[in-house]
Length: 215
Picture 1 (cartoon, helix red, strand yellow):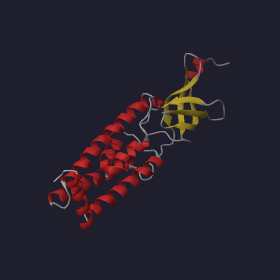
Picture 2 (cartoon, rainbow, N blue to C red; picture 1 turned 135 degrees about the vertical axis):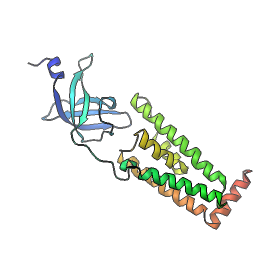
Picture 3 (cartoon, rainbow, N blue to C red; picture 1 turned 60 degrees about the horizontal axis):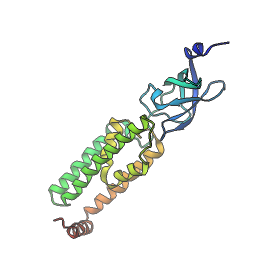
Picture 4 (cartoon, rainbow, N blue to C red; picture 1 turned 90 degrees about the horizontal axis):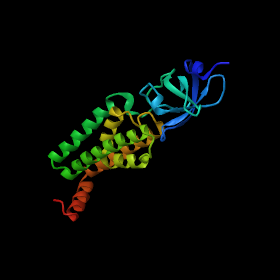
């Protein structure tokens, strides 16, 4: 009969049958059956975000209470970026930069108030901060920032900062359901911005800002 020390030295193959992305942990079912093995996000060697049903290779280890856990986990089949994902490359970042330049140019031409550009810059900065902070919370297995909060900042104009965070921090860029909502916020925000460029939208915006004391 193999001792735990012998088993620990063996690489095993299994399927990620359970994964709680918000909490950063899940369970691997070994190939051929057996009890599920606990795995934490910190045990993955690859930078990509785990997804349910990923096939992985891992080292079986045991904690002080002799409970099995997976370490040095690697993906046997690399999954590509999720649809609608900024992980497709620099395209989303180029689009974000172009969009912000367009907003700045609209301000320069006095088509919209400076406050609009300020909102995009502030919201993007805060979005980047919240993404980075949420990534740290996930890695330390602490209470997470609600996804609705991240989407809120994208919706009001912080989606360029969110795109930068997803690219640099590698957070939320692989979760398909999150990406769908994220791109929905981009579409809604873009529609709202271009409406503001219309005569009616510009007039209503300036009237609103004047009521707040902005000139």
